[in-house]
Length: 85
Image 1 (tube, one colour):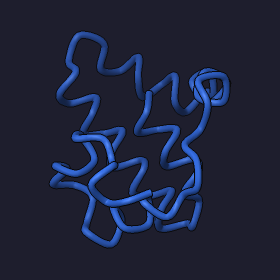
Image 2 (cartoon, rainbow, N blue to C red; image 1 turned 180 degrees about the vertical axis):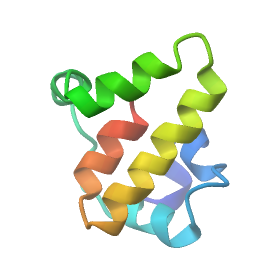
Image 3 (cartoon, one colour; image 1 turned 90 degrees about the vertical axis):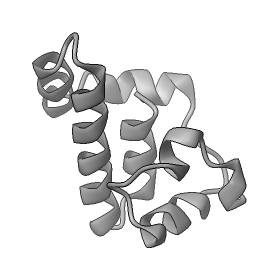
Image 4 (cartoon, rainbow, N blue to C red; image 1 turned 180 degrees about the horizontal axis):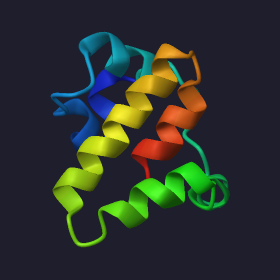
């Protein structure tokens, strides 16, 4: 995937570093909707998304921070799933 093909929210993120964005661009195909839906019910994801119901901006910040953590662990696929929630 080309850097320019990354979703706008990722390209313009101030939380994700340029290196994080380059890592995200290395994926061959983004997770499917079904994979994302299965990921969505993980207890830690549910806790995070439920904590910020009604506050999209703060929720996106925390999701990007979680994605950054996954990237630091080398789990690009999980980082994508978090960012696509």
